[in-house]
Every structure is written in C-alpha cells, then in structure tokens.
Image 1 (cartoon, protein in one colour):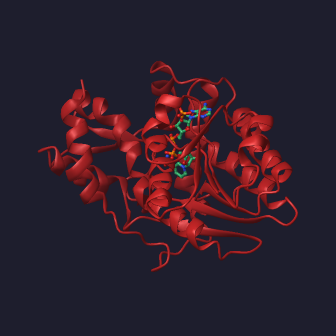
Image 2 (cartoon, rainbow, N blue to C red; image 1 turned 60 degrees about the horizontal axis):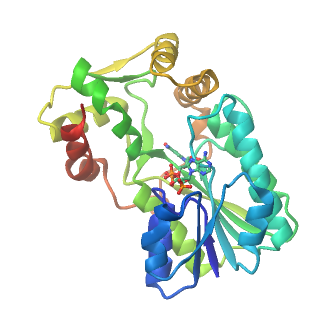
Length: 297
Ligand SMILES: NC(=O)c1ccc[n+]([C@@H]2O[C@H](COP(=O)([O-])OP(=O)(O)OC[C@H]3O[C@@H](n4cnc5c(N)ncnc54)[C@H](OP(=O)(O)O)[C@@H]3O)[C@@H](O)[C@H]2O)c1
C-alpha cells in the first residue's frame, strides 16, 4: 500500500492517480473527504485528518510500503517556521512509529541551506528529521521554482501592467511544472530502488530569468512588452503585508528571494538529463497561465 499526503493538491493528486492507474493500492490523506472523493471513486481509501497530527498519521501510515510526504504551504499561521517544524516532526515521528520503509519527500532546491532561505531552510530541517530515522530509505525531491507561483500575480499584471519581485531580472533559475514533479515522484514510488537518504533535483525544462519569464507570460496574454520590474526587498515586504500576508511569511519570502539572488541557493545543482523534465514555461504560459489571466479580476 502507498500513502499519499497532500493528495488533493498540485502534486499529490497526480501521484495518486498515476499509482491507481498502475493498479496499486493507494491511501490518500486530506483534511476534507470531499477533496479526495474522485480518488476514492477510483479505488483509493481515504484517511481524513491533518498532517500535524502524529497519532493520526501513525495510524494512516501503518502497513505502508511507501509514503509521499510534503509540507503544504499555508498563509494561516503566524509563525511559518514553527508550522513547518511541527508538521515535519509529526510526519517524521509517524514514519518512524509506523515502521515505513520508503519515503519520497517533496523538498526544494536550496534545502541544503540550514539558515537564511526562509521556508526553504524550514525544509532543511524536515529533510534532516527524515534522514535521522534509522533504517528509513528516503528520497528528497529538490524541486525548482513552481510555474504555478506565477498564477498568484495575474492581478498585479492586469492592474499594474508589469510583473515584479525582488528577484534579479537576469538570474537564471530552474522553473518547473508541478505535474513534472508528480511524474518523478510516481516514478520513484513505483521503482523503490533507492537506499539510505538521497536527493534528486527536479528542474523543469530550462533555467529561466524573471525577465525571460515575464516576456513568455506576456506573449501568452497578448502583451509581449510586459516589463519585469525588480522591487526592493523592503517594497516587496510592505506589498506582501498590505495584501494580508502574515509577517513571518512575508519575511520568509524576502529571505528566500535574497538567498536566490545571492547565488549559494543553487550550490550543488547542475542541469543534466536526469533533472531536466518535459514541461516548458512556454507550454504553461499558453495552456494554463493565459486562461487564469483571462479569468482574473
Ligand atoms: N512553490 C514553489 O516554488 C516550491 C518550490 C519547491 C518546493 N515546493 C514545495 O512544494 C510544496 C507544495 O506542494 P503542492 O503544490 O503539491 O501542495 P499543495 O497543492 O499546495 O497542497 C497539498 C494539499 O495540502 C493540504 N493542505 C493545505 N494546507 C494545509 C495545512 N495548513 N495543513 C495540512 N494540510 C494542508 C491541502 O489538502 P486538503 O485541503 O485536502 O487537506 C492541499 O491540497 C510547498 O509547500 C513546498 O514545500 C514549492
């Protein structure tokens, strides 16, 4: 049996579907049965509860041959790092208590940075907790910047006629579609041929700068001259607070983008055939971003 955390989400839903299509026994975790009703209709069983509840997770993980884990993003907490640590601790405790032999864990590029990278340094501690479990085989998928992140900025583009962040305009970063991460996770779960703890980067089709990304997104919405504007860290922080983001989360993004601009965020990453995945930003822009932009207020 496979257990999939975050099964109603961007990566988990695709992974659960892929395993069900392969004829595997799948248990899906969600806080709300309605969110995973389609997967249950397809043959999965559901465990309804929260990822910060170690007792619930221990029961859900019992008998699993492998578990897919992640720390979902949330804007509803006042201390993001504490939320990540508590959720990671609950997951790791349950993996150990239930005697799970294999974990595929969604992590991030930059998770080697113990401090200074905001939420990504939180993932360093989650990786460390899982690595410390005796006998566990764990593969950390260190994903690049999600293409889906751009969907949160359709309003900015529509109302200000620009896309901006504190990221340098000419900084090349791997940009990846969540479906490619799900495909890699499903491949690892089906093969279960890793031992000990290891890392696999999942980097999308190419490294792209924010200036290039803005041009690609702009073309898809009929605005090929859409400018990219680099904001100061302070302006970005104040903008995030004005939009209602809790302070620790706004500060986390500031630190993350600062770490990305700094360069050591990408230490250890080199693009190769193994970490390059099929979906391009052009595909996302034309097939998903354009539609979301059209629907944005
Ligand atoms: N964004 C990036 O650029 C980036 C880059 C690298 C790595 N990552 C990693 O990828 C993760 C996101 O993966 P994803 O897109 O597959 O996740 P997702 O779709 O955002 O979330 C997965 C599921 O988690 C559940 N969930 C949401 N908030 C929760 C909470 N506060 N407590 C417990 N469960 C909650 C929801 O399911 P239910 O409502 O059904 O419970 C949701 O469908 C990030 O958190 C980060 O760790 C992100």
